[in-house]
Length: 219
Image 1: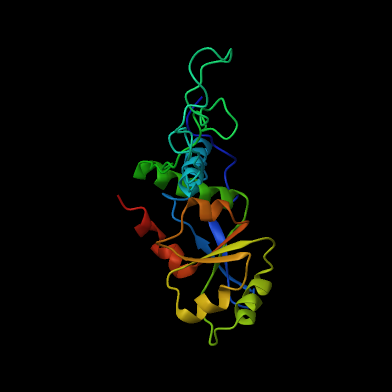
Image 2: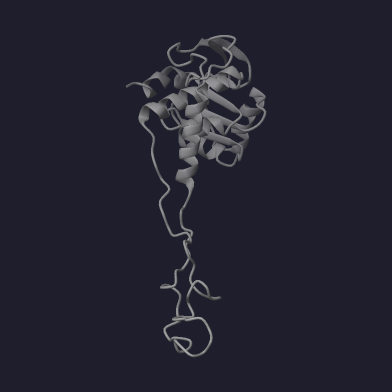
């Protein structure tokens, strides 16, 4: 089987561009080199595993027999008691003793080659294109840093589920207006990653971010 799994092709190589009031103002022709309609599921799986592994704190820890306090005195003499030989009450065989092969703090972090992460990000964007969950907005401008201002834009776009907004620039007003919306994430086109895309139902990109997106994938 080919390492690339091809899903159905998107209906069109363009997406609608809306204004802040939810009215479609144009169709934007997507970059053909980036939006090919191909989704490499194996690469998405690899990146998801890497992300989840890197989120692990690795702080689980148990005490071995050398870490448990006490047990310095031999509980009984070596011979003549009829009981098994014992040198310490902190043996793993005893209640209150140390643990054998228990977890210890470790680092689960690892990384993948840049080409794989690049392909995974493209695959995630193409998956949203195929699902018709990728749309554009001409611009996002907020005069006041209020949640209701940003929420009104979301309502105008009639978004269902959680949404990822990808902007070319994020000013303080937009950041403050969106941070209280739990199902909304705002990212710069240089900073979003594969998991950001996969974790959200909708991806909304400003026209300027779409135009600058090829810069992200330059070799």
